[in-house]
Length: 294
Image (cartoon, rainbow, N blue to C red; front, top):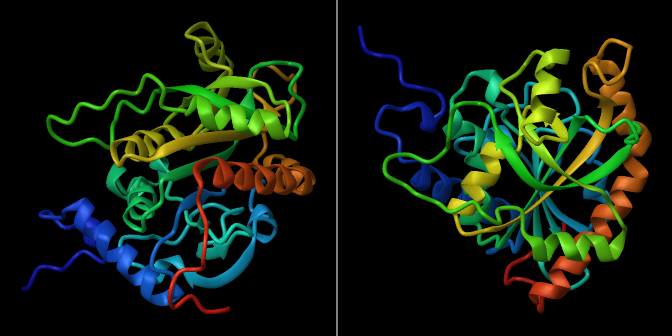
């Protein structure tokens, strides 16, 4: 009997992640008519509305039709890739198809969207998420800049003898630009494996080792973005106090509701921040040849 071939090219034993990312980028360029995207954004829980505010949609793609991508397993993620033209003329790739580590597909799939973004030409990777907060003053709906992270997945997207400096992983320059748009608190994001929420003891541990925010994404993606040479900006929406900070049990429905309530503010914040980043980096000019309207 013939062996069943993997449905995702990243699952093949001889898969080359960079090659699959280039193949995905070629499909995106063909389907959008945009030869190069300058900035990429992964929109986590609560951040989705920003895609409508950042600029003009050029094309919308079902991510599952692009090599290496998977259908999202989590409500609150659109499952699409969107090409947007900013007012500056730059192009942004909006990733609404995040694969989480806890889905069990392996790290290659988790960071495929980031590697694909780099292959499309993106110089900046904006990573957003919904997360639990350790500081009691952070009410649900509070956006926080990520200044550093702690990776508790016991895994890495880097393969072989690949040594990457993460000293300033979350760009001080980009954080300063966002602070010029709106003054935000900054914190250290702690990525747990999930999918269960953290116990109160684990949350206390996260605080002891220097964490301020707990979640199940972002850190592995940020490492892959740095490896790919992109500048990284990270933003968390505090959707709930972490376990033990609040006396009430955690509920995913409340996480989604908190994101929904904050989406107008987050959309404005992210749209203005992306405009500031594009201006600072000189992204833009004439629209890419062949760009077409949606």
